[in-house]
Amino acid sequence: MRLVILDNYDLASEWAAKYICNRIIQFRPGQDRYFTLGLPTGSTPLGCYKKLIEYHKNGDLSFKYVKTFNMDEYVGLPRNHPESYHSYMWNNFFKHIDIDPNNAHILDGNATDLQAECDAFEKKIKEAGGIDLFVGGIGPDGHIAFNEPGSSLVSRTRLKTLAMDTILANAKYFDGDLSKVPTMALTVGVGTVMDAREVMILITGAHKAFALYKAIEEGVNHMWTVSAFQQHPRTIFVCDEDATLELRVKTVKYFKAILPLLLILFSLKDLELRNLGLHSLPFSFLTIYVLNSFCLC
Image (cartoon, rainbow, N blue to C red; front, side, top):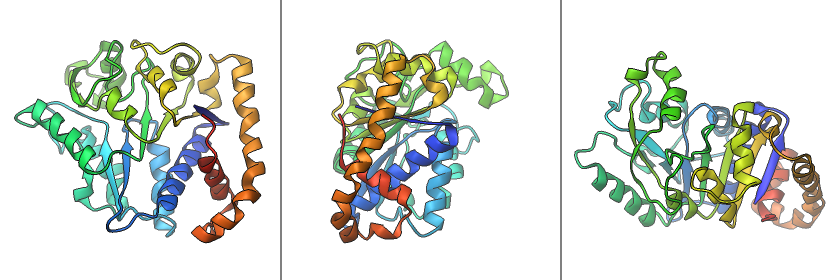
């Protein structure tokens, strides 16, 4: 497990976007070799998506051979509703990049048979070869996707009833009217995300500080579903300073201290970087490449 601490939200978003960018570049996707990316919604990843769009428009990144699978979708909300996750993804990300719409997979919360929809989603992930990198965010109660407190840590994609804390948190997107907020959603399971080859979780803001503490400093607990990722072999938490307020001082110092040490390995990767054509990218991109290559678990 790694914890990357940046000064503020913008820097955390940029770091995460560079990490995703370099993962895709390293993979060398092509017509017969797609990179598979799991994606979240909500306010936290918006900055990351903006940076990825910027890299695409600058010609540094293509999503032509990328397949995406979103974490969740509300049940009963029309697809064209401004607060549906279909609308969110297309307005904030997909329509600004070169992804094939057929490769952007989002659960259908209006399917006639919701369980069949969930089963089909799991099948599509398997047929795609699994998720290479699953990016996620969390709620203040430590839920990832819509795996609310008490969810099984081996759960698969399914129908889930939303907790009142989640409904209250999401009311801001529905004019503060609780009666407009969906009470059910389709969501990937904790086990679905755990199956990914790598997981990156974005946590920003003081209101997420206690959840980050529960995620990395206490034991695995189904009441804090994000804590399950302590057991994933390649998990990276990306946060800002505000999100570390509940962490022990020695925890923060440790993870801040080891980050620069990885840069010592930079020169050792020089030949491989040249072979990949990455020397044309800014130094910060190369830094992320080195961090990608030398995982501290």
